[in-house]
Amino acid sequence: MKKLPIGIQSFEKLRDGNYVYVDKTRLVYDLAHSGGSYFFLSRPRRFGKSLLLTTLKAYFEGKRHLFEGLAIMELEHDWKQHPVLHLDLNTGDYTSVEGLWDMFRSHVIRWEKQFGVTPQDESIPTRFASIINSLDDVVVLLDEYDKPLIETLDKPELNTAFRERMRSMYSVLKTCDAHIRFAMLTGVSRFKDLGIFSGLNNLEDITLDRSVATICGFTEDELHDNFGEYISLFAEQEGIGENELTARLKQMYDGYCFAPDAEGVYNPFSLLNALKQKRFSNFWYQSGTTTWLMKQLDITSSGLEQFSNDCVVARTLVDDARIGSNPIALLYQTGYLTIKGYDRDFDAYRLGFPNREVESSFIDSLLPYFTTKNDAEATSFIQRSTVALKKGDPEEFLYQMQSFLAGVPYELVRPDENWYQTVVYLLCRLLGFYTQAEYHTSRGRVDMVLQTPYYIYVFEFKIDLPAVVGARQIEERDYALPFASDPRKLFRVAVSFNTEKRNIDNWEIKTDNP
Image 1: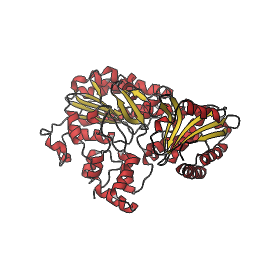
Image 2: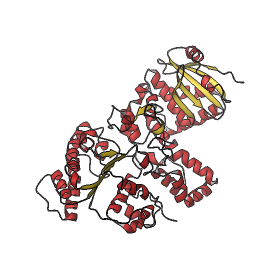
Image 3: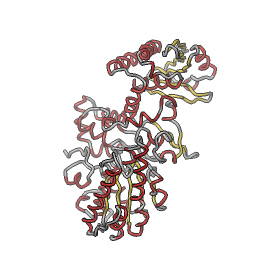
Image 4: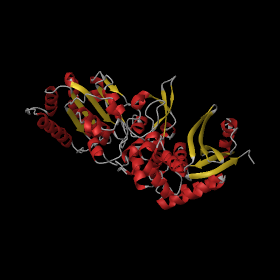
C-alpha cells in the first residue's frame, strides 16, 4: 500500500516517496492555461494549498517525470521550463517586524544566487523587483501570503507595521507585470490595503469559482478511488461494513463547499488522519485552535443566529478578516462555516457548519466562555440529557439543565436572553441532535428547535417572565405549524430564566400527540 501523505506539502517529495496522490493535475493544467496571469485562492488551513503551489512549481519548472501516469500527461506536450519564485510564508518569525523582514530577505538572497542576479545595495523590495526584471516569463507563487497578518490580528500595532512592509513587497508584482507569465497567491483572506487586489487590475479571485471548487480537498469519488484499501482496513477494525464506515467519514469530515452548486469536499488533513489511525476523532481542531478568534467573536452578546443559516452576499465571504468588524468572513475563511445553499435571485449564500468535526470544535472552543464545568461533569450532563431527549422526557432534560446552570460561576452569567439561549443551544448541539437557533416561521422566530429521530421540541425562552407567557406566544404565533405533518411527537416547551437566581425558574410543556 502507498503511504498516506499526512503533512506532505511538497509535490516532488510526495511523488518520489511512494505516497498516495489524489490527481488534481487536470485542474492545474486548466488553471495554468486559462488565459489569466494573476490568481488568488482562499481556502482554510490544512486544506492542501501548499501542495497545490508546489504542484504548480514542478509543472512550470518542466519536471515532466514527476507527472508520469497523471491526467496532465494527456494535455501537456511542450513542458516549457520557467523561472519560478516560490515564497512560502507558512513558517517564519512573526513576533517582530525584523523577523518578517529577515524572512523576506532570506528568500531574495536565495533567488539571487539561484538565478545569478548581482545583489544591489538597495531595499529588499527593490532587489525582489530586480530579480523578476532580469528574467522572462517568471512564475511567482506566494504561499499563505497573508500568514503574518492572520497571526497578528489580535495585535493591532504589529499588524499595522506588517501591512506596511508587506505592501512594499507585494506591490512589486504590479511594477514587474511585463516579466510575469503566471502568479498565484494563496491565503485565508483578502487584505485589500496591501495593494495587491487594488493594484493588479488583472488579478482574478477564484475563491468562489466553480471550476476550481475541488482543486483542494477530496471529493467522494476521489475518496473511494484512492483510499479503498485503507477504508477496508478501517471498516474491518470497527466491525462494520464499508458503506457504514464511509457514511461516518462523510458525516465527520465531508461537507465543505466552495462555490454555488459545486461538489462538496472532505477536509484532507482530518480524513487522512482518520484513515491512518483507524479512529474517529477531532483532528482538525487538534491541529491548532484559534483561541483568540473565539475571544473576539463576542458571541455571548450577539447570539448564535448570525453565525449559521443566515444569508450573506459574496462580498462578505471574501472581505477582509478583521477582528470585530466581520465575524462571518472570519468564520468562513478559517473553515468554521461553509456554503450550504445559494439564492441566485439575490446572489446570496446560506452558510452553516460543514460537518460534525468542525461543529464540535466550535462548540468546544466556546463552552469555556460560558461555564467552568470539568470534562467529567460535562460528560455526565450530556449522557443524562441525551437519554431524556431520546425517550421524549423534556422535563427531565430541564432538570438536568437546571443542575448544570447551578454550577456556572455568577461572573460568567449575563442577564440577557441571548446568553441563556446560546448556552442551551451549545449544549444541545453538543448532545449531537439537530438543533436550530432562531428558527424562522411565517409568524416569527422560534428561539430554538431540537429534533431527535422520534421527537421534535419547540422551545421559547423568556427572561424574568413566567413560562406561561412563552407558552402563549408559541400558540398564538403557530410556532409548531411547520411540523404539523411530521409523524414525530412534538413538544412545545416554554422556559423562564430568572436573572436573580441565574437559572431556569419554571417551564410549561404541552403536546397534542399521545
